[in-house]
Image 1 (cartoon, rainbow, N blue to C red):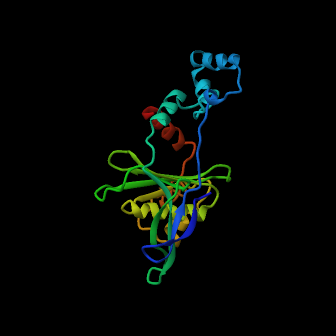
Image 2: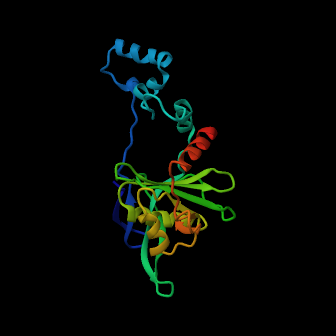
Image 3: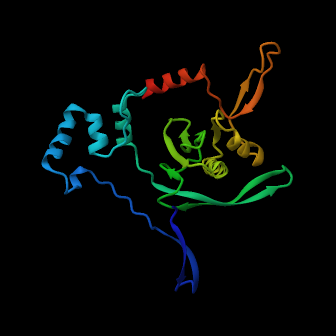
Length: 249
């Protein structure tokens, strides 16, 4: 749940003002904090450090992990997660939706970033006005996971911001537009395999100025290319993408 918006009387301003009250506490504990497990269980978990280090990280230290075989190297993934920088701020965007009569599209107006420890948006590095950015996204598909977005510095490949929202595609699209606007009208490209709605909202409803456009050949007879927004993965492109990711990871 997002932190509560409350009204408090400001003595200096002599009026009520709105502020955000932090009401979230996050705790991480391990077996070392558990006073109720016996010496034998301590011994078993400690032994896992040498016999099964990946399982030790998961079950004893509470770190991210996957049991069994994986496409990517689990040790490298855990190392990357452990070394990942903490966001300098988290929150979400508030805004009003207007309408541009000349362009006949909706507009984002009065956009502002609201700090919140449980917000959808994580900022790792403030925007550099001289840098081009790319905001890539992946939809939740059947709704079982999350709508996500990663903002990348297009010169260094460094991740500077991210978005993670469950279920609500409209809210996801709006937050992606706001984040894109914040980072120099970043190029936005969302995978459209499972859902085309977020990209349609961004490109068509709001007329966002910098959307990723791919070219598709409709058939072998005409050889004509059709332009479509968002990116698409299939059995031909996915192995190449995964292979390159595994190489750099």
